[in-house]
Length: 142
Image (cartoon, rainbow, N blue to C red; front, side, top):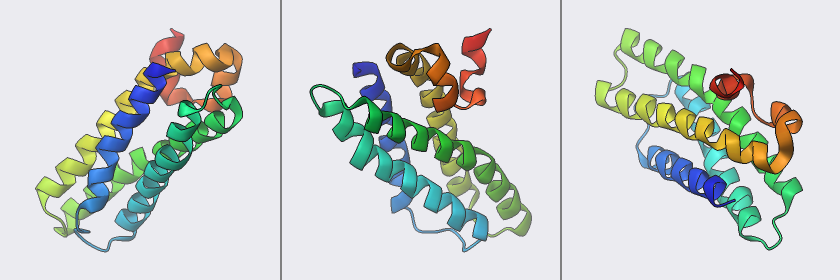
């Protein structure tokens, strides 16, 4: 549980500062990306961390929170790539801001990959397939 909590805290620390940045442009992709990141941070802060602090841990609410974080990030990854590409093409955002967003979401992806073994220990191999999307489990299945 400690490993899972540590990963969730790291993810929250990576994403929360992004929401403090002023919007570089009002591109619909950025608006969608920002909404997704807000959902991830909110779910970690209000559901995952409180569920991990309970004794005993509420496995059902924790599972829901983990699923939401993975699914939101599954959507955020291609959205950030599309937004960066569109912003560079239209010259509508600073390159530094684009790099910050892209790098942060890349680190979030890595943290979610590191979280897979902890999820497997809690829910088992079979249930993990329904909780964690395939692209995060890829390296673990070989």
